Length: 452
Figure 1 (tube, helix red, strand yellow):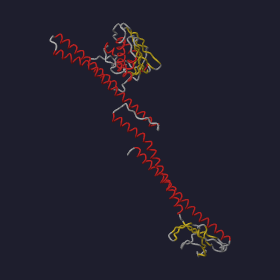
Figure 2 (cartoon, helix red, strand yellow; figure 1 turned 120 degrees about the vertical axis):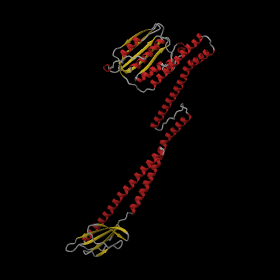
Figure 3 (spheres, helix red, strand yellow; figure 1 turned 90 degrees about the vertical axis):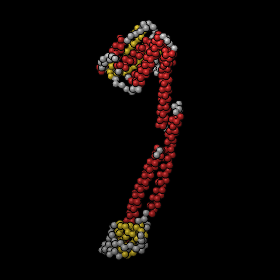
Figure 4 (cartoon, one colour; figure 1 turned 180 degrees about the vertical axis):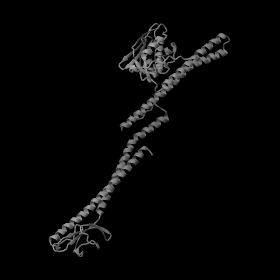
């Protein structure tokens, strides 16, 4: 059963149940009140008319009315002999002083009340009152109430149906649009904006945000696939052509060796690409890693001391002491290694690389700067994209375009931020910002691991 129909059914059952409870409660309460009212009227009438006889010393006046407001009155002597009165029909019922009882007269129900009139020097006489225990008027009233309650319940159900249809209509429209997007596989389409309901409007915005994310993800996937194909095509083409050349075109061993050397270089390049892809995928798919308090000051100073700066480039460092963050030592070294590699690769020949590690409030900021070629605005926009390299960089420098992308993923795992500032011909500066922890929680760096 659909959601809207289920709501209408449940609400209708609740309205019907409440209506039935109200009608039944009204009937029970009304019946009780009416019954008590009839009995009280009977007792009051008999009592008031008995007072007239009592004042006349037991003599019933000639003008005594034996039928007052539907109450039949009759006078009995002390021995129960009927003296005079008015009756709705034959009744054989002994005198029951001061008690209201029920009796059937010709198939109809009546209340009977006997009141004793005490006379001085003589025995008591009795005034009996009989009134119909009829609920005809009340029954008609209750039927009217029930009909009115039923009409109101039906109106409530109809209004509820219209309200639910109006509330569910945007949801149905949203569902149709989602199905259309799914069927067309066009992630550029969006769900229509909903203005009638704030919650549904927020849901539509969330759907659109999800579609935007999926569109970006698929675009990124397509670009990634294209970039991988581009990166793999060149070495594979070279390997294939050199293999065919060595097999069919060359006779001398020196030419074959030259082709084999080219094949070897391109094979190593292929291995480097696949290794980098596997490493990047491993970090990109991680949601968290085991982090521990790490003394970045000590790790940074140690790695700078061991780093082989080339191309006549010198390093100037300013490392603040006691900077501790939650990190993984090996991954942090990978971050710093990649930043230094880029700074040396794209730095000016005989220039300098500056590395600073400083405190900014409760955060640590690692900055690696060079005075090299710098980046254009377009390059800065795509600096963290996988396989992205400027054409100038592609032709002049080795690399796969995964370094900064990998650095960003590691910084993300650390819960930090990374930013680039650069200008063409003026160099590049990369800043990594991480949250600090108290220095007393620092763990000693792990022992060096030698790959074998």
